[in-house]
Length: 111
View 1 (tube, rainbow, N blue to C red):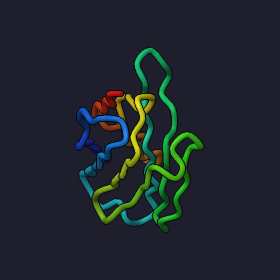
View 2: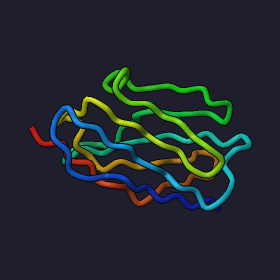
View 3: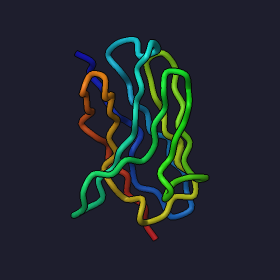
């Protein structure tokens, strides 16, 4: 079982930046893809970005060019720039191989 814990959320003004971290309980370097999802208030959870063990990155259209995903052996990061109020959500990391989800971290962007 792989446990994930997100951190780095908070309140930021529109146009600002935040860096989220997803810490894994074990080594995720070998064959473990990780993704970030988010759930805006009153809406369904949606995929934001993903990164493979080979560091191939993919992004949702809404965040492409503003967000950047990266990783090391035990942590996956989500650098979020040029934040907009519509980015307000609880952000989760997910490792599909282990069907693991973190508890989430709140990001609030004020206008």
